[in-house]
Amino acid sequence: MPGSPLVFSSPQGRSGPVGRIRFDPYSPIGVDPSSFAQDRLGETTAAAGMVAMNRGNHEFRFGGEFRYVRFAGRLDRGYRAEIDFTSGYTFDIGDPPAMGDGVVFAAAGLPANIFQTLALEPDSRLDLRSRELAVFIEHRWKVAPNLLITAGLRYDYASPPRSHDGELEQRLSLTEANVPGLDVSDPIRAQFASTFRAYLTHLDGRKTIYDSDGDNFGPRIGLVWDPSRRGTFAVRGGYGLVYDVPLGTVVMQSRNTFPAYVPLNFGVQGIFPGYARNPAFFPGPLLVPGSLNQLSGSAESLPEVLGGLFFVTRNALSFTLPERFPDASRTRVERWGRNGVAGSIEARCTICRHCRP
Image (cartoon, rainbow, N blue to C red; front, side, top):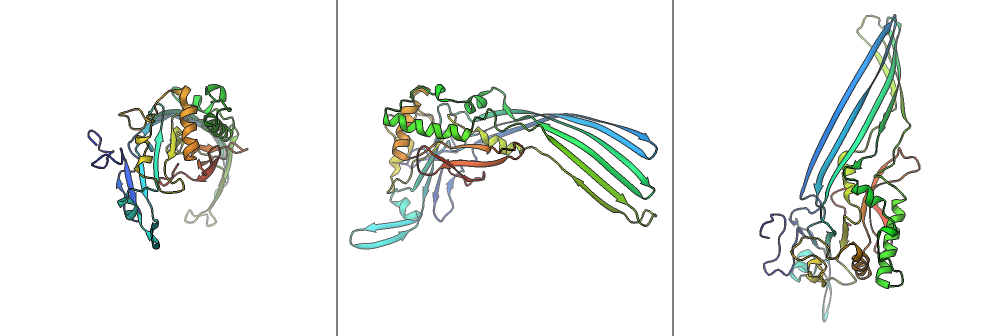
């Protein structure tokens, strides 16, 4: 497409703008819409110090570290449409069904899936800030010339990452009152209402990406013993409990929240659809003319626009967030995607480039 190396189309324009086409079982054409375009920035400012005191055979140490962490970036995941041509059965009058690969269906213009992420404001930038604190105390005791015992305690705390502009937290704090037009008497709007309520159920009242955890006390003990007493041989052993924070590259996936992202599959609905299922060709129009994936309309029209889509395509809202555990220190990141029934969302897989909304 003119002006963009990451979007292409069929010469006659019948496919609409596309980021990648996959032909089962061959290599795809185009770039991975789940990875491009993107940029990332990571900054860490740290200050640390330690004090040591000796008293005969005893040495006491205490100290700490403070870190201010910023990770920001842009990832237009799914902004460019991806069309999948998979293997399946072909039917011809008078002939038995025959298995055909993706190329057969591509020649007929019959994709199995058309993935694209739609958004009211297609801006995938996310700027997260976090503060981390660690303090420790340690006692080193030289019990004998050939025996040293070390014991200590460390405390770690990391604040949940928060967006610099507070927009992510606003999206996580959405309620039905924030979405006008949830009219359950209308079948279209009621479809969106049931889906949105399922989304709120899985958010589970969270206000941040994940909960803070304030009891990360890590004891540790170590021992060094020289049975030879000549410094030529040593036996070492130890135990420690260590806490860490989720990787920034993983936490950044939480940009995928409603209504900033609405990942949808416009593919299989009983029979293979044609290219007309590409959102670029939807009536209304569904997308703002000339845009890549911007939904037409406003926030007030979302229940009607998305309700109509969910009613026809049986999609549901998708998002990426750490799962909430009763113990906030146990954080597992999972992808939540559709199970084919609007209004419900299920855990599918850990984050990877193969995930599909």
